[in-house]
Length: 277
Image (cartoon, rainbow, N blue to C red; front, side, top):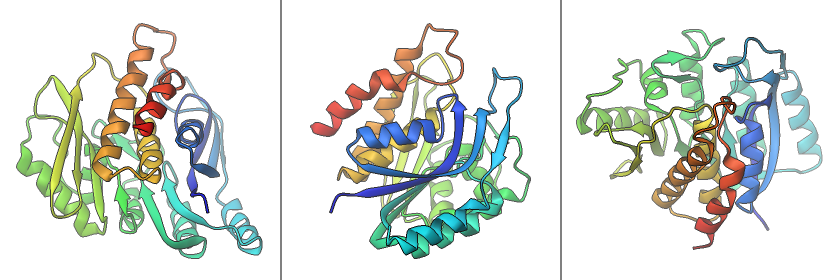
């Protein structure tokens, strides 16, 4: 039986993030990708857009699950992204009731960046997100999200490996079996990830590009999920995802009109090529 992955996150109709990133990238990895939209927005809430429409779909989640159970639809992987507090109990229910034996849970606790929670999340939200992280076989927070999950001070730069190791240990203590901590840097010229299975921490770095672009976390998590489901070891999946983000950013550099995301579509051949090696 082919792998079937369910990704649960919002749809930003315009703006390359969330489901408009996850569906094409995981699909390009050769994995059947089912979706459960948590909400629908006209466009994402990041810089560059003045406002947005928003329709919450929480009430649909239990109805959809009930229908899946009637149809005997199940999944051998779950990948969660941007969701609301009220949706987390429903997602945990989906994990429990719609999982094939040995189903893999990949949790991207998409809620914060640059030391701040995203608009619309209150101070209690990280405690709820920690419930999802506790169920994760693979948790993919950035440094800001990890700090909120653990209730620790966010340090933007100048930290050492001891700080990273302490942070990762805290995430394992929450329940995450494997931790892929993104946005790690010990050198201003390098940016990368720390990958831990609870026993060993490995690092993978790329040269830092002279730009910060919206949606790269979603691109990373989607490429990681697809690579992992293709059978790549966790460190290799983390490295492929990082290289894919860099390639996507390179395809976008110099186009100031493309402020809302990265041109990941132009880098998909690169991703597919890496997966075939």
